[in-house]
Image 1 (cartoon, rainbow, N blue to C red):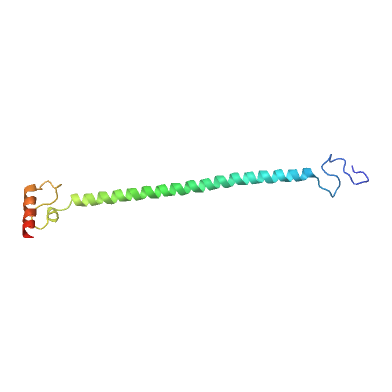
Image 2 (spheres, helix red, strand yellow):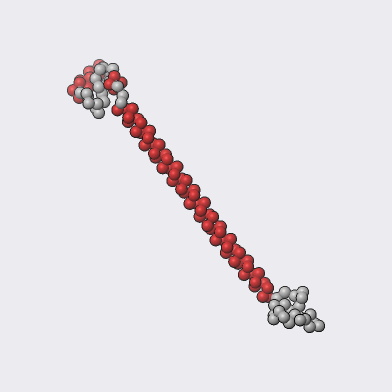
Length: 120
């Protein structure tokens, strides 16, 4: 229902004429832009937090793996040391120098060390 002047009476203030846009249209566009920015910001924040959390989990897993690898290598070294034959534990004089060995003789070890000191 238009009049002869081109004013749309059905729109009730939204359009003054067919070619003219009013302030209310810009407010609607502004609201759409604001809500779009809000949704984009929430999505970006969620995805950024997820990536930070994933990176932190990977770093924690790598650190835990390194710790376990070090423990395994230490255990292997201790096991090898405990299973070493008695000949390898002696320093050539026939005296066992490993204090953890059950056949370790402190007197023989100290006598051997004193003999080495006197040779020098």
